[in-house]
Amino acid sequence: MATPPMLRAVGYFAHAYRRTWRASIMTTFVNPVLYLAAMGVGLGSFINKGGHTAALGHLSYLQFVAPALAATTAAMTAASESMFPVMGAIKWTRTYFGMLATPLRVGDVLAGHLLWIATRVATAVSAYLIVMAAFGTTPSIETLAVLPAGVLVGMAFAAPLAAFAASQDNEQAFPVVFRLGVIPLFLFSGVFFPVSQLPLALRVIAYATPLWHGVDLCRELTLGRLTAAGAAVHVSYLLVLAALGLFLAKRTFQARLRT
Amino acid sequence: MPGEPLIYARGLTKTFGSLRAVDAVDFSVTRGEAFGFLGPNGAGKSSTMRMIAAVSPRSGGDLRVLGLDPDRDGPTIRGRLGVVPQEDNLDLELTVRENLYVYGRYFDIPRRELRARIERLLDFAQLSERADERVEPLSGGMKRRLTIARSLVNEPDLLLLDEPTTGLDPQARHALWDRLYRLKAEGVTLVLTTHYMDEAEQLCDRLVVMEGGRIAAEGSPRALIGRYCTREVVELRFGPGESERMAAKLTGLGGAGVSERIEVLPDRLLVYTDEGDAAVAAVEALRLEPVSVLVRRGTLEDVFLRLTGRHLVD
Image 1 (cartoon, rainbow over the protein chains, first blue to last red):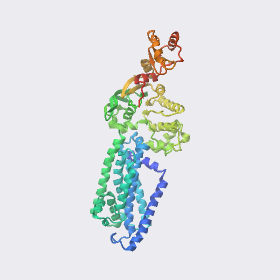
Image 2 (cartoon, chains in turn blue, brown; image 1 turned 180 degrees about the horizontal axis):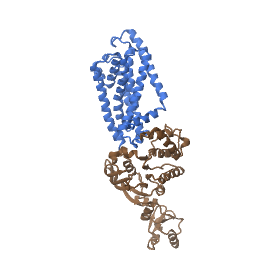
Image 3 (cartoon, helix red, strand yellow; image 1 turned 90 degrees about the vertical axis):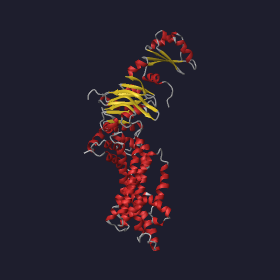
Image 4 (cartoon, chains in turn purple, yellow; image 1 turned 180 degrees about the vertical axis):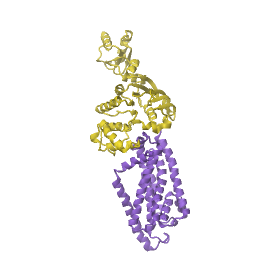
């Protein structure tokens, strides 16, 4: 049976990953250990002792912060895998052009790369879930649902950013996207403190950002508190963003690769 | 269908904004032929190649590749083509063997079959000993041979080579030509672009000279030399600044039927003639005493320069 063209493209990325997987897997596991130790345990003991857990819904800080960090890692992994690597495959290694000289089409190349990014996101989120369990957050069946939720968060970031990356002549804008986009989202999307603690104006902005939807989705899932309405809002928001990104990426990839 | 050309183009056009990179060109390539596009930079060779390779949509005209329409049947056509792009796009971090493997998988060649083909291709490209080394430190010639080996992984009906030997040293060029002869002998149809005239003369059965997006001339290397040049060319060097004055004295050669045409260059005079020795004798009879005299064959380079001019193209 013929291998679907997009999977043939994924094959390349998987093959190339073999070269760096050891270092990459290390970071994937070390990061959650560091964050959960520093934030969940270190900062957490301080907060828990201070009795400030009412705003957290009387959770331990570790329970509060861990699923949000899993959502964040999905967004971060997606962002870093969808800007420089896309530019590289167009400009530096010209990998996309090699693929397009074969039966693969632009859509296959794009879908294949996004599917590979989804795989990387899934690995990173899984690592978080494993480390969370090791830190003693109560495991539940619902927690496993963070994996697909995290992949959805990843796609909501990866698809629009891949579209953006393919529209750029060079990589100059990428660090700016990180500094002025991804990092503020990381700080103000309710990862470290409830968004309800923010002044109204900032709160409204936070509710409009993709990472807050991802954070709230993953957190409520692990705590078994997710309502049908909440799930519908979060999932639709992220799906729409991913779909819009895919639509735009198809266009910017076409414009860049089929001249 | 037998007898149908592998590539058939009529009025083929490519525009980028207001630039007509390829301006209504007609050509066809038949099976087993080695066909060349010659032209200076910016003549439209690469744009034409990219349309044939079904990676760049045409702006106008008709194009059939392997009897199919590249706009509609791109994946099918590309599945039967081998492409050697102008810029290598090998993965420098992967090994030689891995480059062949990942590329072969794009064609969905079954793994076992692919591994067998890779061994043959490594041997063909004289890269067996370097098979498990990373590509990055390999020489330009090796990388080019690897790119050619890679383009053959799907056993293509038609091989497209865009400036295959640009930037290589003479040894590497000859090694590459040798591989291309072998492919030609095996019946592979070759289409190549080049701005090396010796390469075109060596490899091409038939070629077109492109200039400004149009085809300026078409034929076999021999026929083109016959049509646009003479059998021989006498190069005469005189002292600095004397070329013009000497040329005036040589005008009689044309009348005597010894020379078809005289071209004045800053440093020398070119006397186009079918009888080099007779022309030299005529020059000696005039007692002009040039600093040096060289009789050589008319070449494709003479044809090329005549058709596309001596001005620099950037």
